[in-house]
Length: 218
Image (cartoon, rainbow, N blue to C red; front, side, top):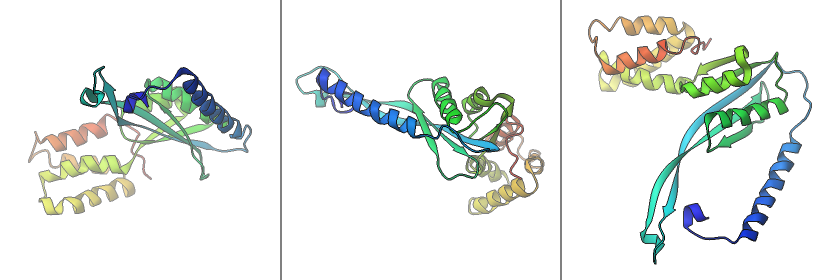
């Protein structure tokens, strides 16, 4: 309330609200199954989002002295393979803090040292780093097709018109899924001769090259 609206709350109210939510959080944590049957894999997703916050300076009319700012909230989701239920974690702190929370939930729902962990998300390096912190060499990461297609959309403008972009992106996506990312890279490199310095094409090739093993859609 103070951060977003500049409303002061007395200490006892803060304590009561905090204890209420802490009790709910503890009940939720205790409701997670302590023991699960055998599962071959844990699936995790992590990402960040920017949320608007408001700060106020002391004045007679604080509405006129407010300033807007943004803070990054990182969110993680954890799921046992072939199950529908997800568990969530979030943090305004560091990437390690979110990774620790995701790891805690993964262990509660059955993660063991022998189990594989599969991550799905964009190409942000911190996501892969946290996945490897959680599962070490048992972690694999897959770049989701939505983010890969964003790079395809900028690359195909080397050889096609604006109205043809969607169709060309779909073609590259199908190639990536059916024939592998190596075939896509080959097709993209064939166009380097015509546009060796095209920003969209170069960024797409670099994006793929910097993330080996993260495009195994088959």
